[in-house]
Length: 448
Image (cartoon, rainbow, N blue to C red; front, side, top):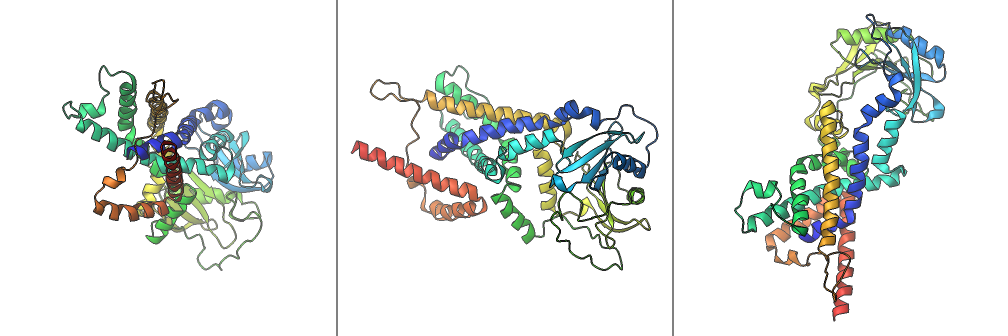
């Protein structure tokens, strides 16, 4: 365990450090967005009467007639603007979002957004997720998420085991607080370990939630959801009595949130769909999406990501104002709920500012733990003239030979299964073992 924790710290810690620092920057995006884009995100003066959505979208389309209306997001608060999202072919997966004052129907400006995120948030999100290196860059964040829980679990086992074997009385204080009067490497180890103990739950949470939407482990998680019917229920948008729509094979079908619609939506349908959704009990901020074609209904989805969350959705026949289908957040499978809430918590949204502060503390703490780990490695270096080195040596190998046979019999298949579930962990672990074996062979040859 000590050797595994050592290699995880030395070789994976740089990935963890980058993830912590970029994650810390992303945590600040709500405030940064208000600072940079406040003139578009907020109204100049809160009014008393909100203009109809049809009037607001007409103002947006008059100012920006290109593309088609993909969706409209109602303001989350009285001081916020309405967002009219336009699907513009030349923007690809991105959209043009027009910000409209809901009280005056005045257009406040526009931004090129990515699934609702501002350019700044999108840039910081890509930095944290893939370092702006595309799909290849996503490997860095998956390495970090795959090994974070291993480093945390190994560190807890080593620290608690070390304290329980010590001469001092066994108490929670010895695990939760650094040793008084310690100096040198003992002091560094104490702060490294104790900080890790206090942050353990937060770090494990970030590791688990990060893996759920990673590239390779996330694909495995998606298979699990499919196998146990754990996905969110689908909303049936086919109008009663209508023929099934012909599948759209156009280049941009399914991108930009337009659902394949080629003609702009009737603004009056927005008012009808919103009124029907409000009558059905959908309060708060909602996303209104026009029908993809004549055989489909409009959709209205709650978009309240702050606890207590609201994610009900309805399909509305805009010609009659009738709700034709509905999905309720309460009816989502447990795994679907945990996955959704985990993502919102990981992004710092679920509990508002408290969530942001907690993530910032964890990010700063992980940075400190990483720095202390490298400092401890340097402090453990040999200093004798005949054995001098820049850093300390790894713990001695061979601990697995002292494990009971039943543990080995059960442990090896478990590690193989874990490597399948978390492919990046499995591949990098195999790489560590190969490097360790080669280094050991070279050292034995030198001492022979």
